Image (cartoon, rainbow, N blue to C red; front, side, top):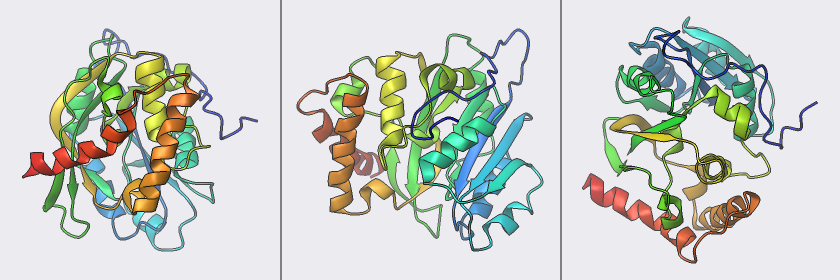
Length: 273
């Protein structure tokens, strides 16, 4: 049995999408939830309203005790769902990847939503180039109650080989990859509690040097209140985990890399203003 803390590949292999054989690759969207009744309906509607015709929406719920799964049941577009106790968000994401049958995989949190109904269409179009392994885009942080109210804008910008040494990372909710990439490079490392997404992107972009495509548009509205930024103490813990992420991949950051990473958030406020 696979140890969930080890980022091993899911099975079976779906292979790379070949644009000559399919003009509409299946896109699996994984939503992890736990007591998300206040927000998940908007998340579900944002997927159900997508113009793209070949979407597999998967809900991985951590045994919610509120109305989350009753709300999910009201959305017939949901292809697969499971509700059971798990060991955290990254375990659940790995579970969702294992359930996915799509050519392309994206993750949409249960309190986030797509910026418009053309998002998946734009993402799939980028993957028509068979050399592209992964895509990312821009993101806005919005008010928890009023998602039309924007607080910060995360304008990613193009990726360059030295970008991550300068504290850069793509917004994980905008990150879509070929299923074959998880099979080749592995899943989320669940020994990390808050930096597993950062570690995964370091592994993909720096260690395996996958080909990345930037979509210079806002595709995600993300509600305020991330785990790693909830308090100063959590920020310190996140920084320590960021250091561990580099070490896990046999990589060495520059002296200023992990100082610049949180400082980049200042630019997000300025960009918005």
